[in-house]
Length: 291
Image 1 (spheres, rainbow, N blue to C red):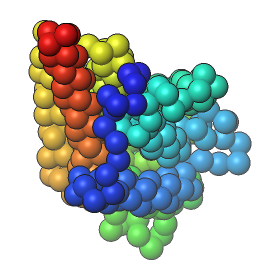
Image 2 (cartoon, rainbow, N blue to C red):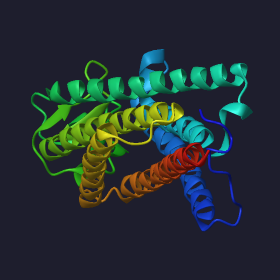
Image 3 (cartoon, rainbow, N blue to C red):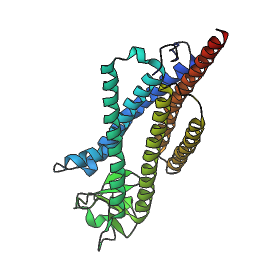
Image 4 (tube, rainbow, N blue to C red):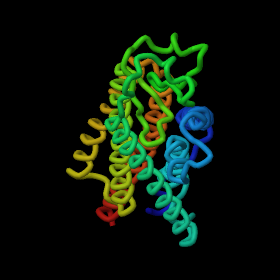
């Protein structure tokens, strides 16, 4: 990165810094809520014989959110707080190591989303079953729009009036859905995959921008191209928010909104840094001309 004079310095009275603190605090709260949700759902889809890979897939959202939190902290350090003069080689290597671990974790999340879709599309019809009350002895949970309910004699008739059902997690057969639930599950699976991939692409654009500005490159066609790509990618994320609101997953929509706000704060850091580079270049040219 450039010298300390190039990087904007923290101003505790800056309203934008207060906004960032609020946004980052909300992200931390959301993170805790997702851990709770993963724990609840894991109780329906995991058993004592579940493998480590199945365990990590069950907690894919928790792993994903953890990676994002660390990456957000790294970008905040790199684009606003720290300069090269403040970073020793050891610290830089440590940050790169954390970044690699985060990207591996995010790749695992994409893998989990793909496997989830494969399982959904591989749903197995329950032959001869026309009511959930026929399978109350099979230790299964009924899923509808990501709501999981243990099937019992008390609730089996009320859960679904459908006459066709599917196992959506072969070969374990712990989760049952009707046709409508299966369609919703497919849609949600695709939205998750597209949303996760979109965020990885946004990360790539930020990494490229930081890499360029690290080398005092602050303008050119590449920045216009990156800006256009990011506008398109953030539009996709707003589309995901709209879909989750439509499906009444308001927590997902809120979480997405807060994450967009968090990375908008990083984008502002990058723009401020870019402006500082341009001002420094302009002053250097004026000083050279006057001399």
